[in-house]
Length: 145
Image 1 (tube, rainbow, N blue to C red):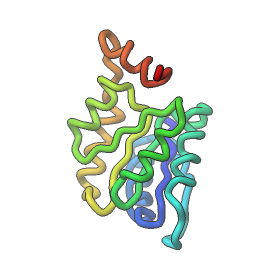
Image 2 (cartoon, helix red, strand yellow):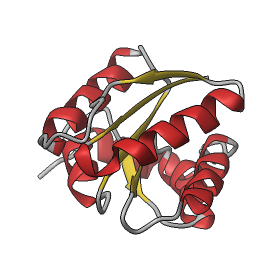
Image 3 (tube, rainbow, N blue to C red):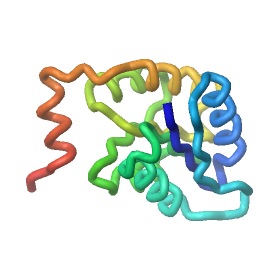
Image 4 (spheres, helix red, strand yellow):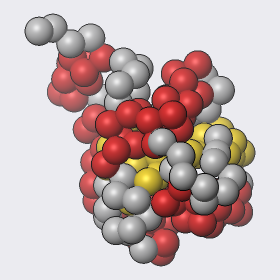
């Protein structure tokens, strides 16, 4: 699979470890930055990640920051993205199965690397369940207010 990964400065080392894990699992990984721990703004990298997935350059996105909250909000600003903030594998699997999430967010300060790897494995190995969930996902893509 083609996977885009991005973070803010708080998750650069976390991102590097997860990107290598994904490569070791046979995925093609596009690291969208940043490359150093110099202060950056998470929305900039969340938007880059969202565009990579929305454009088809990547099938899935992995968004990382200190808590995972800020970057997940940024990713979800794009109408084509459904980014789920997770901290354990069941939520990661349900995000795919029920919500057809195309991005996953995690917090480097809150989630250990082994747990993050388990979340990625669950997320990437779960298919969208369709059925009763399809209409709900369609409402996420095309909201009516």
